Length: 398
Image 1 (cartoon, rainbow, N blue to C red):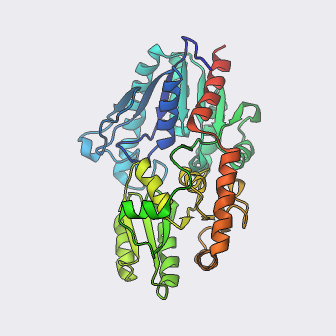
Image 2: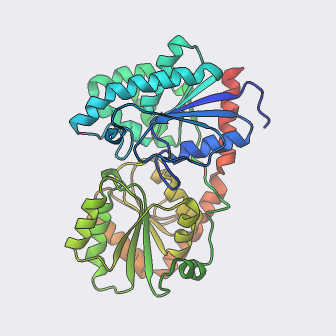
Image 3: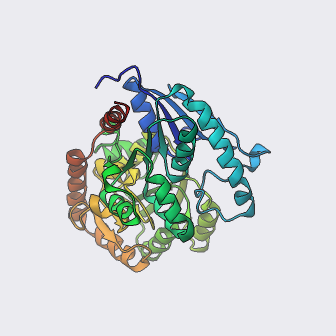
């Protein structure tokens, strides 16, 4: 699909990768990159962070500062705006909103459409539109369900979001939820997350283990995600510790960084699991694909999710998966067919599913094959999903 000369788009996002390998707003980065390849001029506006470093992108990226000194900026990343509890974070909120509005207003002078990611960015986009009329698209994710925690504000926020020209969501579970909260169904477009199918596919496990210097006789369990309370790695660590004592070959690796790292490290020491559980930190996508090839089982213990990319990538890699029964995950996985589902926050149910899969090699193979087939048949590349966005842009601009 060839873009018209009018395709100049401003992306507004409260989260965007701060450095290579950062999970923050990674899907926004993929959309920006693929739309840029399609000939769309993209300008991304996102909050600055003390950890921010230059990225090798081919589109314009504006990281606006919102508090001084820079090292005190803590609001926009890590556990997310809604989950922040410290007085300093709430002090920074008006400064972030004002500076976000100013940066967005400057950005849209040369663009024809605003695409905002998450509800907070959507409100900024709609405020900017008052002064500079433009079509507004807002992508909402599973985490936007948290606005219902603020009953007084949630109805007002829904009314404001309903004034957007289009709402994009990633799965049917979120679509049903948004309609139940009052979002007009006619404004909702369903576009699932994309996936790099060239990078994430079944591969040579022994070769990957040799490259990563891992033992061939290990049974490797892998989990990937930001180290925050929502991802619930503490539950996984507790469940794993109770089944791993008498299984010498078991090892759990967790990829990610976040505010819970120190607490998880302490828990691993308390459980005397330092030789069986490893927190690996962050890796780029190529390295993550190697870990996917090396692993035997993938686990996602989140309390709340939309359609998590790490789960899509694990399934595309042919890994048998165990995931919590939340958000859009049951749409993706039929229990005992493409993976095993457990009740969120239930350590006993997670232990039961872990024991079941660890002991059954045939089930591992069957679930892995079914998972890979499901992704190949039902999920597109980031390029395909970006083309769907571009079609929506064209419809609104015409």
